[in-house]
Structures are given as structure tokens and as C-alpha cells.
Image 1 (cartoon, one colour):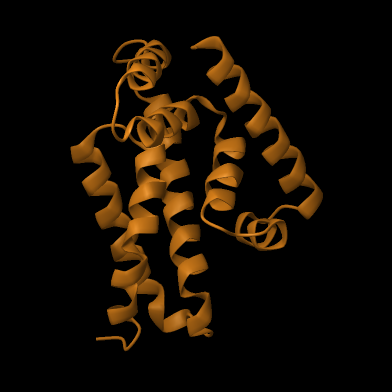
Image 2 (image 1 turned 180 degrees about the horizontal axis):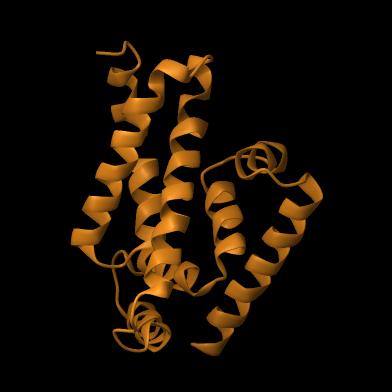
Length: 161
């Protein structure tokens, strides 16, 4: 077993938050987390800098999450998911408890994939330069996507109050 595998566990909450932002269904979330962990396990021997483990794991989670969304888009429609998400946001806004987290996750699912990725990574504490490296885009592009994502979230929030 790779010596870094024991460190993977401490970063699982970040992976779960990322996966929850890409997938609503709990069973599919579990499957996606398993895919992420398998990819991390397979790739650990190629990770040169152990300090980069969190970024490495989240890059895999975002790439697999994006692939998951692309596959879901190509699949036959199961109903109006956007309407479901909007209703969930409205319900979460009136529900006490962990409603803020659920509202945010539901709202993030409404964002276009490029904006969702940037905002999720920013919420995990990565700066523009790190996000740019992880996604293979410029730091200016990260800023544009983050600005658009925040603006879209504000519009969703204002539309459901």
C-alpha cells in the first residue's frame, strides 16, 4: 500500500462536498466517491509532492464530477432537473438546520459546469493560481468564471426569497 494512502482519509470531507455539488442522488454520490478514490489510489505512485495531495484529490474529483455531468446530459432525460433543483432551493430556504449548505449545493448544481468547478474549488480554499493550474486555464479566466458564478448565485438567491 502506498504510504500516502493513510493521508487520503483526512481529505475525504472535501471530496464528498465536491461530489455532492455534482450529484444529488446519494447512491450516485457514493459511486462517484468510489470512482474518485480508485483514481486517487491508482495515481498515488505518480504524485511527486505529498503536499499536493489535497489539490490532487480535488482535481480528480472535479474531473470525474464533470465527466459524470456530461454523461448525465447525454443520457435520456428523467424529468426537469432544473425545476427540481429550483424547488429544492425554495424548500431549503424555508427549512431550518443545514438548509444553507443544502441551498448552496442545490444552487451550485444549476450553474454551468465551468463556473461550478471554479466556485467549488474557491470554496475549498484554493486561490486563483491554484485553481488555474488544476483546471488548465488562465488565472484571468478563473476570475471571470468566479465572478459570473457569484453573480448567478446571487440571482438565484434573489429570485427565491
